Length: 208
Image (cartoon, rainbow, N blue to C red; front, side, top):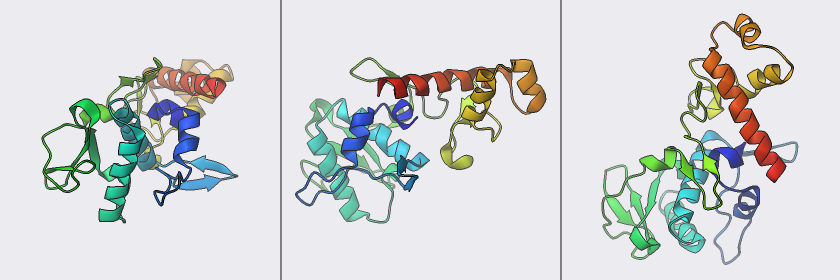
């Protein structure tokens, strides 16, 4: 699911958890592990999406340098709280501070940058290998992600119903009407969205 929601391949996720040496450390470690498996939080997913978007325009080495700079300057702040954008041509990365300033964090760390936007990190985008990464706020019609609801796990819009729980009922043969009878707060669009996202996750697992 993390691969589907971020656009990072499973191999990239594994690689970004490794320490490349030279005192740089992993690009991002999952917030938790359970039964030996990595468990990424909503904040982790936001940060990973940012890395994938940045990787389209700049090198992994520059991304690592930007992350290292932020960790030095703000060690207690999760990377998802920072807005980063590659400059035209990918020569450097700019950080949008909470004060609304833009600072270079790679080529000339700490120097003023220029105005760039981060909205597209949350929006739908396509990876270089042609995969469509869904909008993080609405990964499928009728679904939503909100860090205040189940820690950012995909749910049916307007509810706390996990998408995979509803998708499991669909796969068990229950029709939309039966599911809506079980969960009156659900909608037909949400049931269909749960099926769509579950299919995306399954295809991602098969490809891995």
